[in-house]
Length: 291
Image 1 (tube, rainbow, N blue to C red):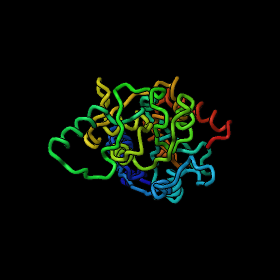
Image 2: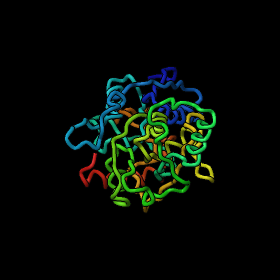
Image 3: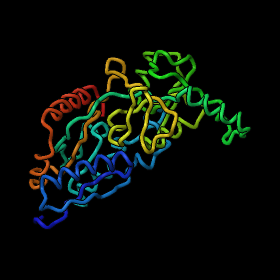
Image 4: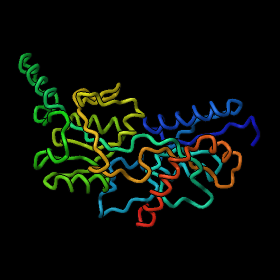
């Protein structure tokens, strides 16, 4: 590869994946202005299995749901770097590949998201005053809650939607009376489902992902952003309540192990303290038999 060769950065095509890949792209172009960098969008197995659940014990899903196809692109020299949410990257990598750099970690906490009772009540009043017919069956049955809701405050029988085994276990630890159901899709899709489907009461998402999509939680507890459905509230869960998964909040950059030129680029992208933290977390996860 010479100085004029384009360096391809592999990424998934979801809004969050693109936001993260564009962060790395900007860093690459700033650090190496004379080199050409481009994104290469790749659809992964996880993108294709939107109805699958990691929490369904009766079904076996492949490891590396969101990474395998990106790794194939690296091995076949169709890409030079692959950008991952580090929590999605298996602890055991394919031969010939390595975790070459980790970006500075964002907030590791999770967020409980639920509908705003005051917003729903206002909608019902407006509908009654204008004699509107319910436009979607079940809309009027949606349940809302007050701001600053805690897991323990959700009423018995309320349904929390998540396909994360980790989140499911911890939610039930704090409130065993809750129902759990599987939940897949990108961040915006999940928010839309939560807002519109009366059988769902809450979900849990990573704060880092919400922040990278330019969503924000106001001082009143409202979740806001260009693509956020109106009427959602959010409570940030401290690690003592919801322990994050290994690597949460960090962006991982995977490369070929023998590519010295790309390794030199990754040295400029790496955040040392974050790498030390996530290396310890991933080692613990691997020792416990986690992927």
